[in-house]
Image (cartoon, rainbow, N blue to C red):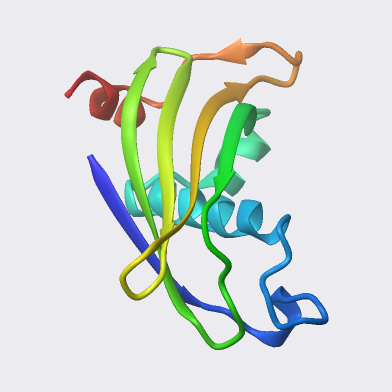
Length: 129
């Protein structure tokens, strides 16, 4: 499964040199994941009220080329693998033509007891495809 999330770089996303601050890439891929989950009909607020939240268990990232103020970017998310309790994603941030940032992210759903619980059926079905 593939998901695309488009966004623009604003002044607040950059450092003094007009280049995107490195930590903001994690915000961008988080927004893309939230958008993906919502597009599948999963309400994260409803999950939280039931005592479950998505958490990042592992992330590895590569910064390949800088993004700058006013750039229009996209996050391309691919489901790589998973299990009933985890989802492994590849999230790439692209500029007009170039790959700028790449991350491999492992997501789990954590219960109120602090332990992983089964992912919603909609996510498990995607992983099985």
